[in-house]
Length: 373
Image (cartoon, rainbow, N blue to C red; front, side, top):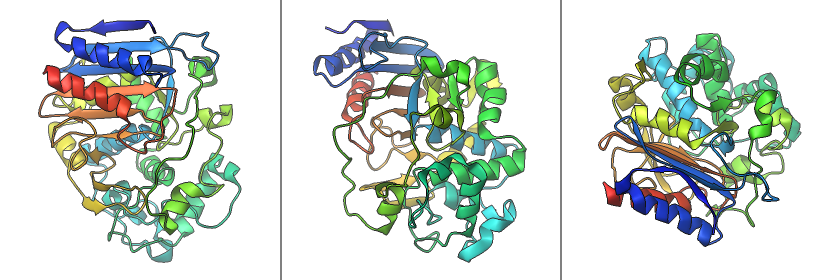
């Protein structure tokens, strides 16, 4: 039996049972799940190991690579610019980044880019994967690239390129990188252990990832899916110090479940956390509002995208809340907010599953939590 540590409010005891059951079924190496209700931590569970040799406990200081769950932080940072009146979702990307207007992208809006409608899910032509570590080079390629479909006509998930587009727009408006702004404006003041771009001094805390046994089920494989996921240059090496150090706001965040749950809990509870306005109520609603709904060209799902956040409907990956939103990451991590129930949560782990979205392990925990409400 795996020792489970942490805290569970009495009425959420079934969540602890579900968490232990994931380990008993040999589905976990190490994991943590945190739930925040009305600003209070009601569940914070952890167990297992941070290393593949099973010698280091997965504890309160363990950082997990959260991959695309990083997009929750990027979406929040963009929403804060909008909230401050420094950016509009309706203005074009090119109004901030003029070179982006090349190859017919002059009318692509910020909200279209954040809702994966820009037609730039990846690069179809061969390149050196190490180029992903060169921010300016990737931004130059994206600015010059012709969309793979007419922008605004469909969504097609941008697993990596989302972060470069959002991050470059943010940098040009704010003057700082997203990783710096996250630390200075949110995680530093709130004492939260979440990072976009991990300093070398923190690398020893990162959990070792156990890769899945096979590829996810992508459904119909088309040009967009291949560019996004299925070429040999679709990503950089994801465990190197260079990758951890790099700031890629779509994919290389490192965090504890507690940190992500507290951020999402703030978005579920009027935008306040410990006296700091994370985002105004109007900003939360505008960020989460659906921009496009229907069959995604890359993901094998019907989806509804907000401005960087995936809406819970129609898949209901994060409980029954129709107004809930969040994001998942490669291998199973996720973070979500449910404003109707003032509930935010996050799950991180280091044994990756094969589900692109809606991993069964966090779904069991979230279902147990909602059953206890």
